[in-house]
Amino acid sequence: MIRVLLADDHALVRDGLRRILQSTSDVAVVGEAADAATTLQLARKGDAQILVLDLSMPGRNGLELLKQIHEEMPALRILVLTMHAEEQYAVRAFKAGAAGYLTKESAPTELVKAVTRIASGNAYVSVAMAERFALNLSTPPDEAPHHKLSDREYDVFRRLVAGETISEIADKLCVSAKTVSTYKTRILEKMQIPHDAGLVRYAIKNKLFEDEESGEL
Image: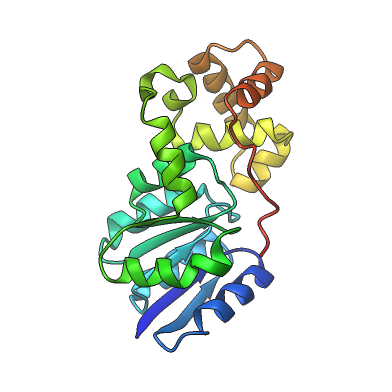
């Protein structure tokens, strides 16, 4: 029996995931979390073999949470389940310790397969994401300015492009507005872009964030 912990801040999403996983007799959902703090607490209990983790929960940057859980509990296999379909997010997730990466759009048809594969010690990435990896292999990472951003900076970059204000970003990441402004300054400096509008143009030109959905199943 594969024991799974679900971490997503949307109750309807967790309900959908639970129904999908419990449609097979080989999987049992042993816990659910709606925020970063509860996810860490339940992961530390050691009841689960697999953590299905959303990267956009309140309380903390998802990639930072992923990295901490992997460092503290390397035996816990982590499947990232997210609305972020771009290749850059997947790369960062695997570097932080993920064993698999799946978009919520693909969950209804691929979730059980992904969990089963990860539980057996293998990695999992959807066919669509594998194609994205292959298409981007010809571009050296250091040549793209957004690759210079830290995980937190990249998250703030995504939120700025999505139109979130400094205050909104600060509330969602549980940091001060001053801290977010500092991140923004670093982003502009690292990417050598003079203003916010330039960030939006850069994202559009490089086709970043264009496939994100509402995050609901």
